[in-house]
Image 1 (tube, rainbow, N blue to C red):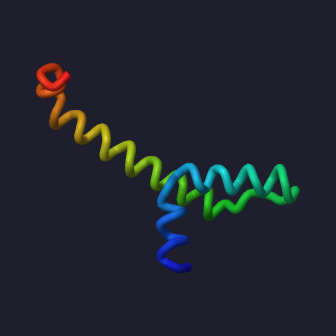
Image 2: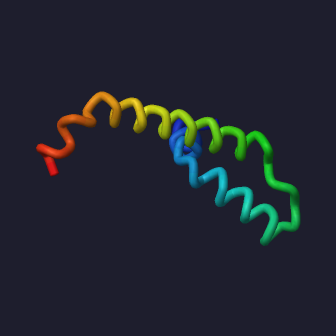
Length: 64
């Protein structure tokens, strides 16, 4: 895939939308690789967000 396709699929919602599009418009089973990639990216971004929250948790009250 081109770098633009990689960038597109780095968005976790892209895989979910592709799965819906495949089922609703084309009557096909969703691509499990695409859904798996969306799941992995979502888990990585979520874990990174939780980790950053734990690091900066004490500063949030001062910033808000």
